[in-house]
Length: 229
Length: 101
Image (cartoon, rainbow over all chains, first blue to last red; front, side):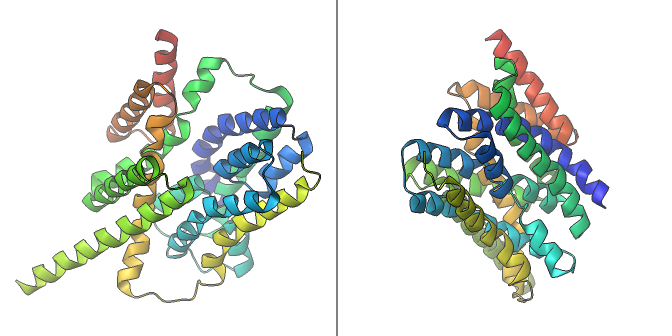
């Protein structure tokens, strides 16, 4: 099971590499030491929040604002963890508490699209390879900077998005509901982000909750009318 | 640079861990009504939608870059490529595109 997790985490590990390398490079130019850069990737393990914290640090923002911004950005993981809990096996609590640390947009997406239940050992494998890639590449990014050719770096920036598409499309092919959920949530996210300037973390939370509830409501209403006929 | 940078990092780590941990450990025994269980089962698809759109179209200033990446990923996945294959193909397509343009 651990091996299954590692196998399904390879795509994440590859996708994380350029993102973490860039983080390491930016952290260096922001003035963080190699130690602080690596520690941040080890302790926080959340890409978007780490990028934004660098920005805030360079602007001289206070600790409270930085931590609050991180919280707002990462509150979406609450929803992901609650959703994973629905298919999590009854493992020892300390094991669940341990793998909860490794829930990111990417590890969540892969685990959620897996068939059947998810065990702690699967999650450990999935997180082990993703986390290792994140931490190691952050450090390498700080040490060597952009060693990849410019155009490869640019094209690798699509990797994690391509992975999300690769996870979603098979579900959409078998279940019409998945398509409606994704389209509805994606469009709402556009409106919130680009139109109303809602912070990224909240925009994802709001569009996910609203679409998940609305579509569920529509599905149940349809069932009711079918029974009534 | 802050002298208390380590404390900031620790604080960031704690506020990131708490939302990840609570549902799996503290609230895990709560039995939800079927409607809300259905909503939670919908969450992954809705999340993926919001993670992909509009992000993929905004990676680079050039809008063609994102559109090309999106379309090649969708086609590869639709034709049955696994996740690794989808990643490989869209990175390849965009590498060629950045070399040509």
